[in-house]
Amino acid sequence: MRIFKAHKYELASILAACLFLITLIKLFLSFYIVKGESMTPAIFEKNWIVNHKFAYGLRIKKHQKYLLLWKTPQKNEMVLIKDPITNKIAIKKIFAIPGEKFKQIEKNTICIHDLNFKIDENILKKNTKKIPEDHYLVIGENKQISLDSRDYGFIKIDNILGKIIYYF
Picture 1 (cartoon, one colour):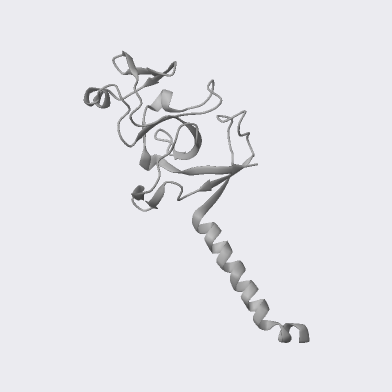
Picture 2 (cartoon, helix red, strand yellow):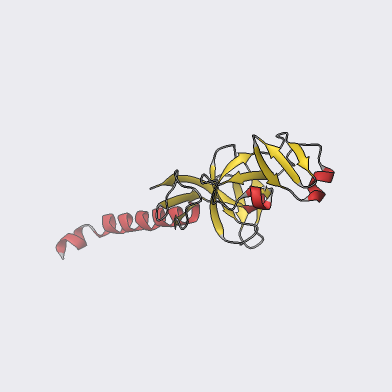
């Protein structure tokens, strides 16, 4: 008991530092266990991932939009997205970024880097054969089973929930 009394300020400061650190981690990072095999062989089912929530900007959760962007996703980065079809959270890789050129091969299908993607006709009418600003194409590593931009087309930056910074 004397040890606690003699070192109560040190113990209180250690406890306060730990609480502050836990709060910071919880604020900036989110942790998930992977369900599914769309990112195999890079990330396997039941792996843990660490998502950096503010890697690209300040996001307002209530409105599901970015209030402020300080960086944009780059090609081949692994990101956490809100799937536009299922509304579930998914891990995907950025395949193509705004401004990249594509070839239209059918009424609502484009080809970029030898992969075909179904795209909304309204976006194709407005566009000059480039991926629109704030839109991305994402794919899963396991292309045979992954539900990705080949199925639902472009995703908006607001559907990107963060950058995967670590997985194990």
